[in-house]
Length: 237
Image (cartoon, rainbow, N blue to C red; front, top):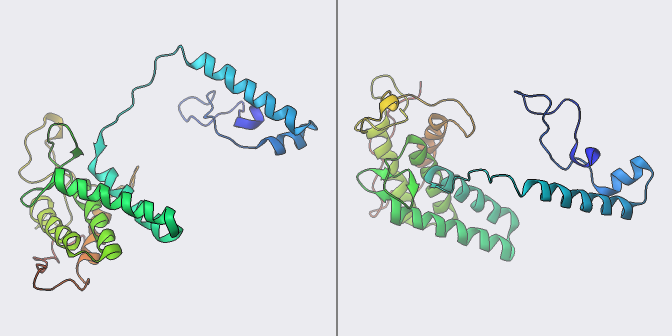
């Protein structure tokens, strides 16, 4: 099992080198060849060991699982599923496309308004959205527009980006703040910051720049699609 899960004296946890993160490093075929054993024997050993590990884990308290449906993360999934749809094609690709659009339509219906853009989560009491929620959703809307050519996605992307500029943008210094200018006071979160670091997701200001570039040149300036409002500001430099 040490070979199977890559368990070594020096583990992967930076705060405690004695702890290992279990991951499948080798399959039964490789382990059998390395140890000179029959592959069937190795597979049985792995199965029995997994059973023992599960029996030891079950009595422990179950770790908390955050089941909140965050808008920014769902938007990233929408973009990922649309990418997968193009790459896979066929029935599987169609299923990915349909699920992505179904998710995006739910976001627009439940957590988006023309006056404030996207909220922070799907379901539960309403929470003010962050910059991440706006810009990742704009990218998802643009991806959906490029997939379907449905102008309502592009219109929603434009309106959301205009709101992001007006409510999150720094008109004097350039770039965007993480919280809107009219956000309610939240204790230690009163200070508005400008997120640039890519950790654990791409920095919101970087995504905002990409969204601004992608919003501007698309051929959607028809009578039913409003033109961008001051789309060149705020600058990121």
